[in-house]
Picture 1 (tube, rainbow, N blue to C red):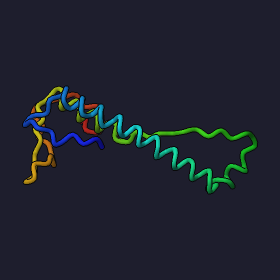
Picture 2 (cartoon, rainbow, N blue to C red):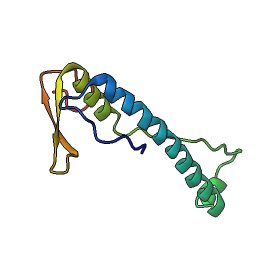
Picture 3 (cartoon, one colour):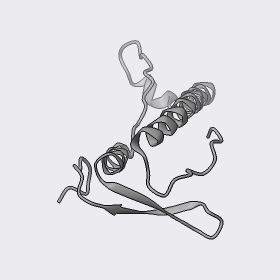
Picture 4 (cartoon, rainbow, N blue to C red):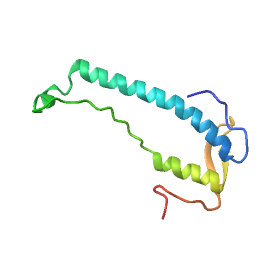
Length: 113
């Protein structure tokens, strides 16, 4: 990703996290599109699916598809940062390796029980 350095504070600030998140998402989206184009090119070049495509009785149109695995985790994490108090836990090198969440926050993903 884009080199930004380790988050400097002791408590995560929602606006700062969102600023960093948007920068990384721009980089990741560009990388993902390039990767998907490469994958589709290689499928077309080596005709992995030629037998399956031969069974279609009409002109086949190729669509680009993208997955968004982990969306609920991102939503819950950003919700916690915005509405609760989230403290990063750092290792001996100062890198963030875990988080402590103090308080309640709206949960949109899998941890909503």
